[in-house]
Image (tube, rainbow, N blue to C red; front, side, top):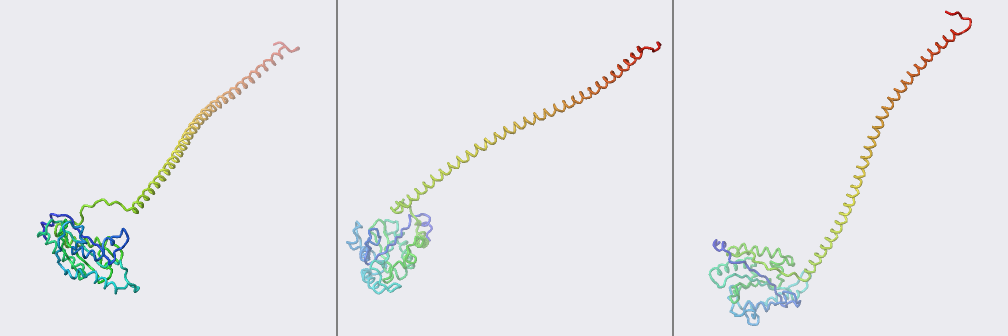
Length: 318
């Protein structure tokens, strides 16, 4: 590992995979509709009709495989596909992807020593990863950055079986990510390339936009419902609080009235005790007066009797 390169990143790694069939898909949004096998072979060999996107075309440098073998790929794959059958014994569709193109790019303006070191390790990585299925490797030097174009096939069978971007015939982001991670560990990090570069903001698709919009509208509706419910609960709580406050005030008034009644009762009971005491005093006084009156009556009666006895006829004078 070159420590200087790893410690001073040049940029980010670029690895791009594309699948091609004998007959390109007619679907307007299909990536396979951009080119078929014949076109991508011609593009790799810089045939003018397939290289109009390149301002100044230069012949490719073939690093693995011969030009004759590359030119024969459409026929070879067509013959291989003709004898291939699926699990039910059916022929493959004409738009089955039979060829995979892998682009490895290096952020250098020239084929210098740094590029050549990266190229050597990248070719080794591709051949180790794809094995004998990697049938051609070419260097292109006529675009912004020099890059490698690798062609991979599986003898006429669908390349979804061997593509890093597919698992069990289904597209897999995680599988493609593991392929990128493996390339980063084996090559990218050794040559000062970051795993990921700056990402641009992608506009969502119409379907995705509608789904997100529906989710947002649903969230707004749910929020409005929650706010309405919160308002109702607050009103209920306020009403309960008002009733509780009224009950508290009524209880306080009742308690005050009860305390006043108790004070009045205690005062009345105290007055009753005083009145009872006075009544007893009066009764005692009445008894005393009655006794005195009876005693005086007895004295008066005795005096009267004595007086009568004194004035009675025939009674001797003393």
